[in-house]
Amino acid sequence: RHRAERPNAVWQADHTMLDIEVLGADGRPERPWLTVVMDDHSRVIAGYTVFIGAPSASNLSLALRQAIWRKSDVTWPVCGIPDILHVDHGSDFTSTHMEQVAVQLHMQIVYSTVGRPQGRGKVERFFGTLNIELLSTLPVRFAGGVPSKPVLTLPELDAAIGAWITGTYHNRPHGQIGTRPVAAWIAEGW
Image (cartoon, rainbow, N blue to C red):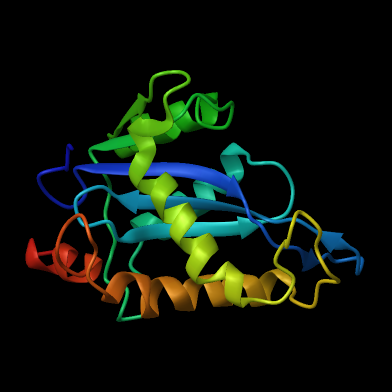
């Protein structure tokens, strides 16, 4: 298995529709999406965004902005610009907007082989871990494909995901790298 040599060498980004419903702005149930930007070397989550509606270049840009800039949370030290951003062929990733972002930031966008999500397997695995460890503990998870009435709002879900990433995911040993993701990030001098 390939692993980037250092932090910020390669980031992976992808979206997933979450297996949970939240209360929409109009009080009706909505199924949110999550965009994640992950550092390939350390497996830290550099940035993310939770949103309602279809994935877009704007949602990806919000996650990238969070990934690039320093966070106000001192327990989340991840920031910088990747050399390579590894993505799929979705229209949001192949957009003119993302081409312009890549040129301005001096990063290369690498597209995974069509029909082979294994190129982004690390971020796909993160989505599975999030579903099992966090979403399964929140109210209104899909059970047998049928949701119950939602009680969480989108900001509450966002806060729960952020707290789980920085409090749990970043701070426990990762099976593939043998150390905590945040420790792997810091160990390289970042």
